[in-house]
Length: 435
Ligand SMILES: *[C@@H]1O[C@H](CO)[C@@H](O)[C@H](O)[C@H]1NC(C)=O
Ligand SMILES: *[C@@H]1O[C@H](CO)[C@@H](O)[C@H](O)[C@H]1NC(C)=O
Ligand SMILES: *[C@@H]1O[C@H](CO)[C@@H](O)[C@H](O)[C@H]1NC(C)=O
Ligand SMILES: *[C@@H]1O[C@H](CO)[C@@H](O)[C@H](O)[C@H]1NC(C)=O
Ligand SMILES: *[C@@H]1O[C@H](CO)[C@@H](O)[C@H](O)[C@H]1NC(C)=O
Ligand SMILES: *[C@@H]1O[C@H](CO)[C@@H](O)[C@H](O)[C@H]1NC(C)=O
Ligand SMILES: *[C@@H]1O[C@H](CO)[C@@H](O)[C@H](O)[C@H]1NC(C)=O
Ligand SMILES: *[C@@H]1O[C@H](CO)[C@@H](O)[C@H](O)[C@H]1NC(C)=O
Image (cartoon, rainbow, N blue to C red):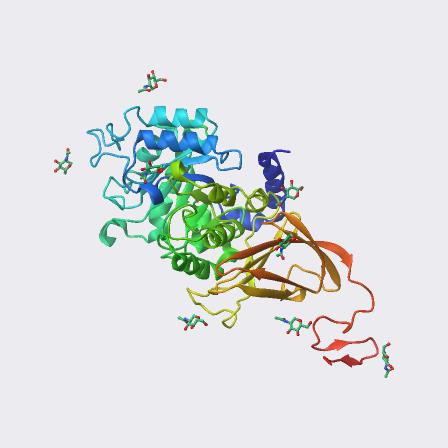
């Protein structure tokens, strides 16, 4: 079955079981978006050649094959002023073939195309925003230009005396416009990617409006930025599912400022937290090492899991007490369900190599009294069968990603009879204690 048809099957099952939740969301089951975004590498310095070149490279480097199928144009593609008719105009110097021709080129290579606007008067770089022009802009983006996704920012917010509503209301205006254009044209609605930076807790309400919401301010090219985003998202990871995703922001893999191990940890965390995966580097300069990170198919399969939509969550923090918010030293021990077993992420936030060990009783997804086969998702090796615990050597700022599959009952006669001693009791009432 294709991903799409498996997802459709899954969606049918979920919709029939979880009708309560269905009533609260826009009903569009969605895997995390994967693709390219122009912002991190180029900011406002974008044009048609760059988009065409990046699209060609996404294909020739094998990234489309690996699942990265969106080409998203970020801010700075437009003229500063709308046309006399009130339409956003693509800058004809930067984009001489026009947006409709550009998206048809992007589509002809097998990609979908994304565009950008803002829920205020202007975009963050000062180009026209869509406030009070939502419907006409949704028509321009989708019907006139052929885009399949809209990233929607949060700059230049109108005065309260004009909006009389909160952030939710401003973003809902565009969500409604997207739905309306789709209904009128009988086409699939644009994917709506909210970029509200986590100010008003979008993970509580944005599921009704779109497929993903940014949870923090912009990512930076540093390990500090990566750990701070992971720390923040460790507390809201359970709000991600098929109907909406915490968006941890564009990837910095391939950009300077991160070591190889840091880039690998960054990408692994984004993928296993089920964030959209948007490449943000200069593809003309990408290294084989970074390409290998971006195309780890065993981990991409989990990001795109057609059966389980939820994120990994922490089961233990590490050097700091559990539930501590610490933007430099976030949670280190994570687990989650997948189609094929339990995935474990061990994130070494320390500045030196560490031996990282966990007991199977610590993860809610592992059964007591069972043993597990361990698959290393970075070395792509089967690492034997583990009983009760597993230990990995993890480099400084590095990561281990493991897939644990149930391998039957643990061997008979293990001592002590319970992995957790607390009130471990025989049927005649005898307590077993450690030592
Ligand atoms: C854009 O609009 C502003 C305000 O209406 C006007 O002052 C300005 O001259 C216009 N700029 C161009 C390039 O048309
Ligand atoms: C844009 O597309 C139209 C219709 O397919 C075509 O006639 C035209 O030559 C294209 N323009 C450019 C600049 O590619
Ligand atoms: C992208 O990389 C190519 C190849 O190294 C280089 O020529 C180009 O200047 C880079 N672009 C930017 C904006 O850094
Ligand atoms: C589960 O395993 C199958 C068979 O190897 C594979 O095709 C699929 O992608 C895996 N799913 C996940 C979520 O890893
Ligand atoms: C974060 O954790 C480190 C290591 O335990 C500690 O030194 C630091 O004070 C903590 N920072 C905050 C803000 O709690
Ligand atoms: C793991 O289990 C061992 C006993 O086998 C125990 O000593 C240790 O405290 C446990 N560690 C955690 C973090 O639960
Ligand atoms: C799994 O085995 C491979 C091959 O022996 C080894 O390189 C890797 O470090 C092991 N993984 C873990 C997490 O121990
Ligand atoms: C309870 O059961 C255990 C294990 O079968 C046995 O070793 C122990 O003697 C029993 N204790 C009593 C009080 O019967």
